[in-house]
Amino acid sequence: MSTTASQPEFWNPRYASGHTPWDFGGVPAAAREFIGAHPRGGRLLIPGCGSGYELEAFVAAGYDALAIDFSPTAVARAQARLDASLGHRVQLADFFASDFGHDFDLIYERTFLCALPPARRRAYANRIAELLRPGGVLAGFFFFAGTAEADGPPWGLEPTAIETLLDGPFERTRNLAVHDSLPMFAGKERWQEWRRA
Image (cartoon, rainbow, N blue to C red; front, side, top):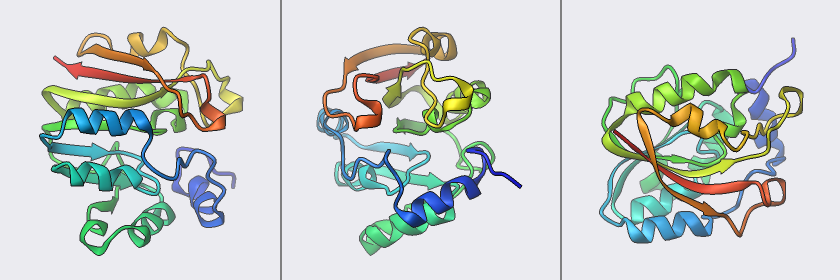
């Protein structure tokens, strides 16, 4: 039986073999700048955390951070890489089905939305709105490429699709070019911040 990007079995062998061209290997500049400008902390969720590099930076800035992935191999990789005091913050969980409570102050987006088949985008937007407190922020990297269904992952958005997806419960407050993209995202991703009404 073939697997799809909606299943952990699609991602497990990629993490196990180290074939992860989406893995930045650290914290991108825009994320570092955001953390530096918002060191107050708060309750943070990192969905599809992969190797969990950003978790360390957010926790160091005072955030009460939870990083999740539905790939057991990704979770094991992140936990093995992190200091023992941080490993418990990486959990095996399904973003759409697991109970995290509500009222996150921040949800960090990094290659999670573009890893989802386009048919899951509306569920993603609804779940983000459900998990963020009023005034909470969705911040991170968004991939704009208009990728055909057969060509992903990653699946890029059409430039206006993010407004259609998030407009209503969210207001975009920042939209910046990204200058240190990985080759697969170069020239096609932007740092954006969306505040929940």
